[in-house]
Image: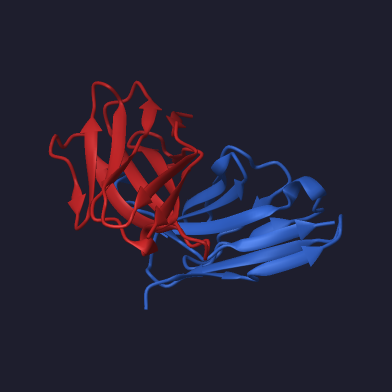
Length: 116
Length: 115
């Protein structure tokens, strides 16, 4: 299975500021998909954003954007204008386009604290 | 409302007592999957199903069984639960299209404690 690494177990950001969460992955495939999921204290897994590996343009969803560096195998998440409701565990996930199981391979997560 | 429904949300039980966690989705998704989440390990896939009567093992299938008799349902069965299966479990589903591009929709999770 492909390895997904989130090197920041915890991050902190002040309300209205910008924070970037890091994610790197290890793969030899060219066809794959990357996702960021948010898990608030309610434990739900909520899709934040996704990126297709064949697309060079970085995905954006409102205040959330990614910096996808395919050659470096890096997929960071930028949260702009942080809000208290953004406090959660964030998981980076990789999904193979070739693996018949289509499993999501998750990183271990980054806990984001948002301070007033 | 499109959703993945898991039951129960919480369960405390004892070693060896068979249990089933149900999962149902109303989005007509072909693909369904079970994950377990443990502290410091993220989520790991237990079993998945590409369609009715088609199931296969994920990364951590030992001690679990699944079935897919209907498209909407994908129960997780622990025939003889053990304490190392104490975990938070998630069911997820998605369409199969475009070779894995479709995002998976998750249920709200089931917290299992095996004493």
